[in-house]
Length: 383
Image (cartoon, rainbow, N blue to C red; front, side):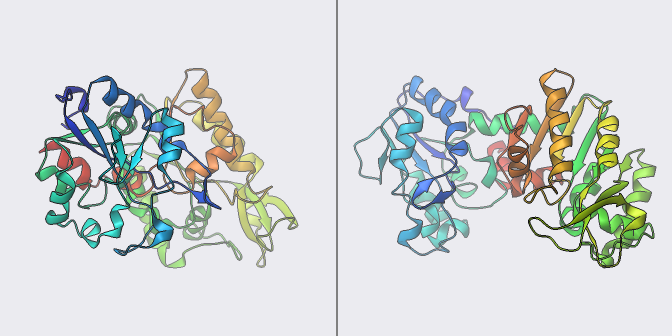
């Protein structure tokens, strides 16, 4: 069981806290403050607990162990100050009570999980807190090695993330359903296999559904599909029956000859895809069928879009199903958790980001948790 910062002796202590402030920036301005906003409760709690100083650790981009000006975190303290309503300094010598250190990945020791670099980071505090679930699948110095030098605890946001995933996987209200989309079966193979014994139903959409159609003998035209994964797809279908998990595949879709804005398309069944066409979204019948199936669910886990949602009208399926799940969530009928990859963008596009029970901003960590893997950053809090 991981140790929570709620149980830590915080008063008058110097705190080193790992956050994920790898925020999107365009023309020098932060375009989305979600990751900053989500850790505000943790910062507020630390301040209210009477800590002496808070030193923030974060990475930004991929400078690959070199000091590159374009990856400096120097632009961020004014943004943090505005979002959190408190002064935030920059660098180890600032007089501010809260300070942000320079990009961790300027040092090769960060990604190498170098204990010597971890010691350098640990010098700044008496207690270490990890509130960055999104990097907890990385065995990096600021995530794993540092816990060997300081008493270590989980932040409020990290705890919230784990609680949400546990509710979906370990102790879900049943029936429990997973919606798995995305381009390739190969990238979600471990995920699907791990979910089979845990789910009552799994809805498959996106490009990966085409590989299952191939496995069932359908012609998918120019649709994105992995012919070398059909044996794995058949194996999943067989294993699903053995686990009493229903696999739900689309029955129709939107077909086009090119993936482009304004492209001509038609809606037809999966038995009627022309050789020069590709399936870019699930069809109206499929969306209605999926909504009907999900009507029985008490817990819904979402990872990946139903189609090429970036370009209308191929966003129809994703938007329709997302809004249905969101409506059932708002009425209190279902617990809904989404995350990983394009999921956050897809649910935001559907206008339901605030209506799901929980949406994870983590990518790789979210997927690895669902795959049943041990996350080094989480295991380190359970020593």
